[in-house]
View 1 (cartoon, rainbow, N blue to C red):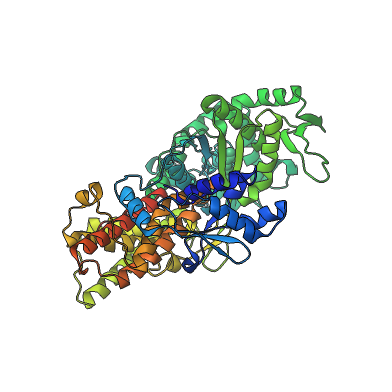
View 2: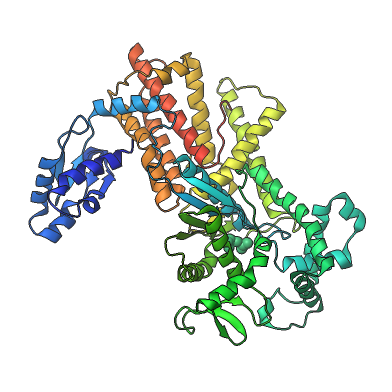
Length: 595
Ligand code: ARG
């Protein structure tokens, strides 16, 4: 059960006699900042009194009088100018916790109106080294997919590869002019990566867009001609493109595997839409959405001086990123009939998406939610742009390797410290250890990424990411494993604890606070979905684990004063572990039973 929603429903009933807009006012319920003032607070009396006149305090009193308290609520208090403070009955909390213990979904009800989402994420430009933006898109998109699916929505994932761009001109030129055939036979991915970098090195000037006109750079010019030939269907270049593609795909697959991403439902790159583009532009023209302007076909958005128009066909006949994206929207709607399409793409493409969505709405897609789930940049620990140490090879591979190496160090250090304290440290084989290092290293990267407000930039700082005392995956993974070890030591039959849970006793403030925090898991998920922000989940997990440590330092579990208290504390431990595990799982982060 989502407690905030349950409170809002009760409040809506109480408000229904007072205002026609009772749902709007009822939604103003928040978790209390300070537990001394209660568990939740309603702030509706102030705005309502502005609208209706009268003192907010009097209104608050009227609302409280009409409120059905049932077995859920203590009589609410009115504070300050007219805040209504709610306190849940402890017996009610205990009963809810028992229900939660019994529930595989930990109290998260499936959406009552499931929606269909298409999520467009990762979407790298293949045949170029992946950059960290694609790492961020992959991690975020993967987490959103898991979160929405868990809530009962239908999610179709689509990797919109950039597989038709100018990078292929570079590869075609490199392959024809500079290839080392033996190296290509032995390791095509590696040789293609080398060729890409080698050709780029021969450019005299920074890479320019085609529209910037002719340039005095013979190699870059030759690459452009190769791209143009490919796009015109030149048989040799098309055949080479077909030969390159599986190698390019294998390279990104490797990264996806290491990251443990969900498999994509579809991988329909830009090339897939090429046959549709001419017709898309004709249709846009026929409907008066695109117009001719200096030989090109463009879509205007008001004054072209203020908002640059989007080109859908250049004067040389070439189609654009926007044309492809419009064709993609049409295809997705025809195929999957989604309610929403989410684009998990960096902030720099904000204008592209704003214009794309405006064009799509004119084209007839008014009822479709189109959302740019934008994210900021990933910088180096020094605040500068990230680049490879070696200057060659894949930056992403290097970051993953570094994270795993750091995780290994942290793990060994903690084990050493535990040994020095005379604690027992589990003995693992090298293979098992390696699995732990990977789970910790990859988890650290993902958690650091997801715990940021997504539109902010952040620094790739491995020391912070693997800190054992902060809001990190490492901390959560250890909290989980410690909890599991307590349950093992207790000798309790876990299945029984879950199937026939005791009604927990919550005699201390620590236990009560932990119970409430556990029951707030559904609220965290709802918050993460509203605005597509997984950091709502990490923030919740962090608060949960702090509440848990308060409980754990103050309330002996294995040595509780009575058997019933021991049982109910074990239940709290077990639920904490389950929520952490489920929460991390929704972020695509693995937990480990023993570390
Ligand atoms: N390939 C693009 C890039 O790397 C991202 C594509 C995002 N998706 C889309 N439908 N435009 O910048």
